[in-house]
Length: 423
Image (cartoon, rainbow, N blue to C red; front, side, top):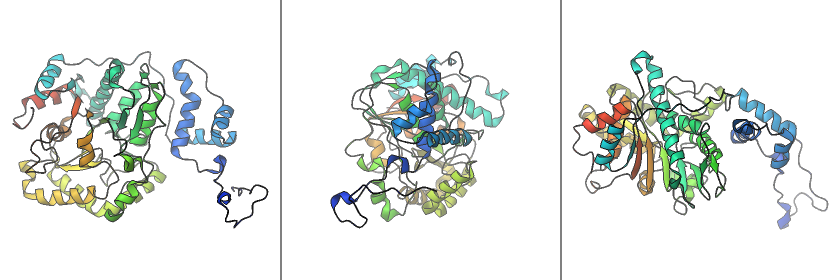
């Protein structure tokens, strides 16, 4: 049982003096998953660089905690699957890239293109095919970031999203030389809502808060501050959104907007992080996620059902970027377009995530997305009026400066009959 903090000599309970409000000592603060992951990485991180594990006593002293509490927290991080030991490869595999597709995409869209060749997917079972693609994308974009140090400038704010492709990206960065960046801020834009890869074996780590922490660990130089994490429920009643937004760093977006955003795009399918069928394996986390989605559960259930009914291997009617949902225009969904738009807008108004206005404000978006099921969503994001707002929005475009997609999706984009693509 936790003991109550004692008052310093000379102070009594009920004293109304300004000094009577005494903050809880550090060793009495609740321990979060971020603490557990951070301490585990602090202890064993030096092993990645050929060093020795840091002593628990040193970590405890630095964070003003008792050593036995820190030790138990680190053990729980491993037990809950938040961190794990893996055999470090001698070097990260170099994924070959299709130069012709990259040059054609750059000529058509005006951004830097990265198009890895993912190999023969037909030899893999279905759930492994998508993971193979996303793994190749993550490795390729990680090498691009390391090889392009001029991307990082003092004062920049880098937003990091969620999803399996982002996980593979930050995991690949752990195997490469550290990024050189001084005076930047790294922020989570999607919070701690857990996602999953297609095979279902990464359900506890595919979230923005975790990615922001891992990304920060690979930066050499002084960060402007510790990574900005969301640490809040995902959804809320519409009338409370503005006030609750200020409980996250997103409430300060106007003062410190994201200059660079690394994110993927998804579609509302059975493996999507907002789909009601998604359930993390850890029971405690499952309950937290259900509670976080409660304000939008009814509309999300209806939207998920429509998406399942209208979906095809290469088309899903609802996509997302950083958890902001949008209708994907297509003749197959035209009869229910108004219904879909209404549900999408209703859900977006109650999500504590970036909105349309903020996405258009980001000056540099690095988009990482691939596989057949995401092609229509990706194509719409690359074109004008990506969220299909209609008249008056024909010239609006997201400022996508880099696209990392698989070779076949790159070819599909080039061969697409959609005349609105390109510049």
